[in-house]
Every structure is written in structure tokens, then in C-alpha cells.
Length: 171
Image (tube, rainbow, N blue to C red; front, side, top):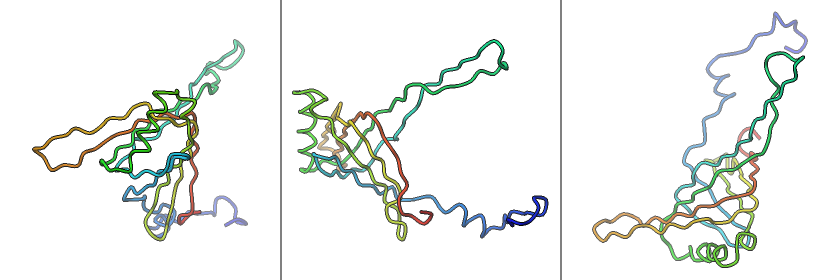
């Protein structure tokens, strides 16, 4: 195809060709969480990870009517981790207590969340957070009339996040 004139180049849109270009999405939502200096955490869910940049528009009188756009400050959302009540949550409660007693500067840590894909993919994505500290713990409701799991949640804020793809079939 490289040496062919553009009008003779074609794209194969057959089913097998398209399936190879777009593999199935990762199912199962398996992940690991590690906070440096605190420990690893198992959880049943993590809220969406978000960041956004402010957009500034600028136009000078001699330019076309559409303004130029520039990026401004980047902000990050909160991260909520939900998990069932277990004894190994104590180090995370201690981490929250550091914030209450000494402030966020003393409690700030780095954290990695790794998304684990099915075999043969292995780990497929990694989120690397800096400046992470807990803003809130919600201890799950207790109800003697139910057999449901007691769910605690930990809300975290962070200074920055970088995302990178790992291994997987397309690496």
C-alpha cells in the first residue's frame, strides 16, 4: 500500500480486520490500590477518575471571528473508594487521623491504582497519583435486620494524576 497512489489504496473493513483493530474492552473491573507509606487496599469500587483544564479564549481585532483557545489551570476530582468492613482498614483510619491532627501536608502520599485485565492481557492500565490525602471516611450503616455487607468509604483528593497503558495485547 505504501507505494500505491492514494486513489488505489483501500482499507479492509471486513469483520476480522475490524475486530483486530478494536479488541474487546476490559471486563471484570479488577484493580489493585497501593498507597506509599500506608499500604495496599482492597476495595469493591472506585469512583471515576477525572481531570479537566480551564479554557481561555483570546482574539485580536485583525484575526478571524473564531477566537484562539488556550489551556489554563487543571483541576482534579475527588476519588471515592468503597470497601467492605475488614480489620486491615486500620492503617487507612490512621492516615485520616494524621490529616485531622497534623494537616494535609503531613498526610500527603503517592498512590498507584492498577487495572488488571483478563489473561493473557495482565495489567492493562496504571493511574499514578501524587499528593493524595483522605478528606473523609464514611463508616457503613449497621443494621441487625439485614445480611448485607457493611460498606465503608474513603474520599481522597490529589494534586495530579498520570495515566499509562501497560502490557496488554496492543503494547
